[in-house]
Image (tube, rainbow, N blue to C red; front, side, top):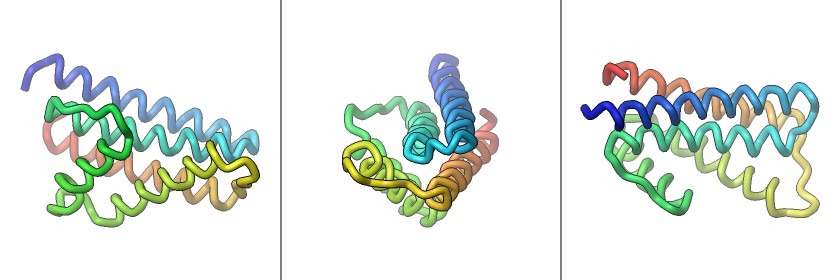
Length: 132
């Protein structure tokens, strides 16, 4: 596999890890809406790390996620639960970012943090199995 593709994949996974670390800080400071936002982006960057290996990218988040679900979740490369977790993260992030009176509870933020962590760990294992 070409070095620049692997480098982009690794860069995106590092970005996912750093963003999840930021989500943890937001959680610790009780910024739950920001926690959910950062959790979504952490998971999204990990998904984009997988897509980097295909040398494919999308302008819209929904297209990247749809491609991931169709080509990785549906065929069983990743568990179906991963697709559901990613969809819920996207929905919660959208509500937190765009709904004026949407309130994120501690429990919801923690649930989304664990979801992002699970997605990132699954993708990390997938990449490790590929020798990345």
